[in-house]
Image 1: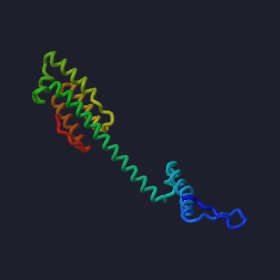
Image 2 (image 1 turned 90 degrees about the vertical axis):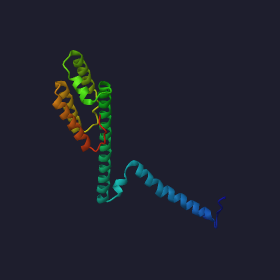
Image 3 (image 1 turned 120 degrees about the horizontal axis):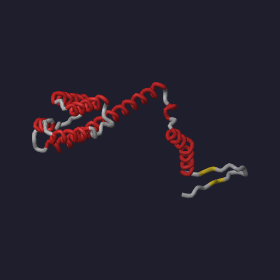
Image 4 (image 1 turned 180 degrees about the vertical axis):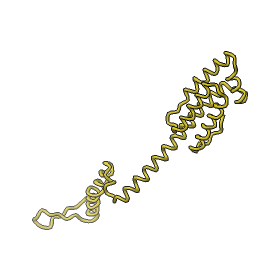
Length: 175
């Protein structure tokens, strides 16, 4: 549709006829209201438009969201660490029970000692980054128990690891 501009007198004022007036008003609203609001939003000034109470509520919600994201990230890191632990345990364990594998690794001859040294070396490679600090501490104690070859501590520290796993809400089937 063409816009007709009508000059009613000799002045420089023009009238716009029909829907063209609506289109012109719509364009003015867009450029004078919508565009500035979008620009402010993109620049991050929206929080200054809200009252302090609304800003606090938004900050609280943002913090809760960040905490939930961090907890989920930590749970995923725990699962990665346990999966790695499980894979190196299964390499040594094969088809025998964990207690039999434990007895084999802690046996007295030099062959078993070499296996134990390799097993501990692999335990030290378990990716603990991103895991909660209590899980990391429990796992490091577990490695230390293996280095000392103390069966009682090995079992106790594994139970500490599982307690940390449960504390962080991770469902893990175990070895």
